[in-house]
Length: 279
Ligand code: PMP
Image 1 (spheres, protein in one colour):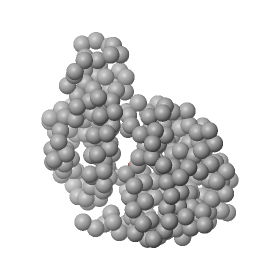
Image 2 (cartoon, rainbow, N blue to C red):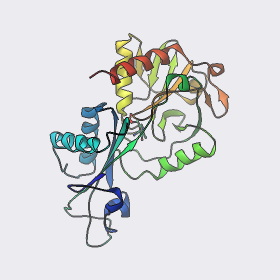
Image 3 (tube, protein in one colour):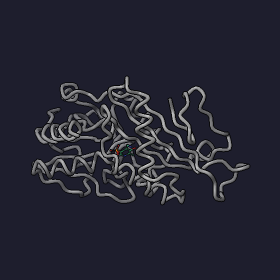
Image 4 (cartoon, rainbow, N blue to C red):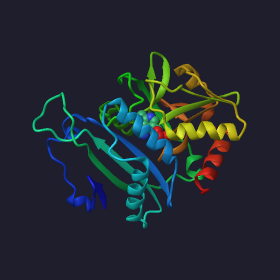
């Protein structure tokens, strides 16, 4: 079952008009909520980011947070056979009578679907993962979770073509984030990640990881770092709602810290699992 504009219907019956601006222009925003059993991790933070995205592109939020919560829970309830599910929520500006760049006030199109997902076990993560780096050519409003994802899609496909997990992005020598995750390094037991602002998506997992660092009394700084810092870091990890916290052991074919996975990652990973599994 999926949710489309007020109704829960089978995915095979869910259609939108070719005039939908989501289809024509990628004119919309989206969110992804990770759900473990019935627990939605970071629900409030995801709804807050959704509101900020809608504000940024001038779409009136079609629902209150209370309503979203109810709708998301109803969608979850249709998929109880999924152990973990990720809820994809998209709001596009809606349909006009013809294709034109400008728009009047339209009725937004609201779509939600659920996909099962399995987070990797700690043992699997300990095998390490590869990443590649590319220049970050995206616009200066990466903090808006826009459905216009062409650059991110190209980076993700590039990683796949290189048998890598992710593409780490570099803007003027500074590491920003990845195609669909945030990036962290550890040096001398201090965690670094790019500060919030126009160059990264403010990841919900990123925020939770910073709280985990505080809980574990590990120093964490929201401070930029360079590609050279990345290559000689003690640890590199990426974070997202569905990947959780994943250690990266090679970048552009070069091993990070001789391919060793660090103790800081292990502590933060364990703390994140604790939080995710408590109600
Ligand atoms: N950066 C980008 C570009 C992303 O697409 C994502 C995933 N939505 C993230 C970071 C991680 O965000 P979150 O932790 O909220 O999933």
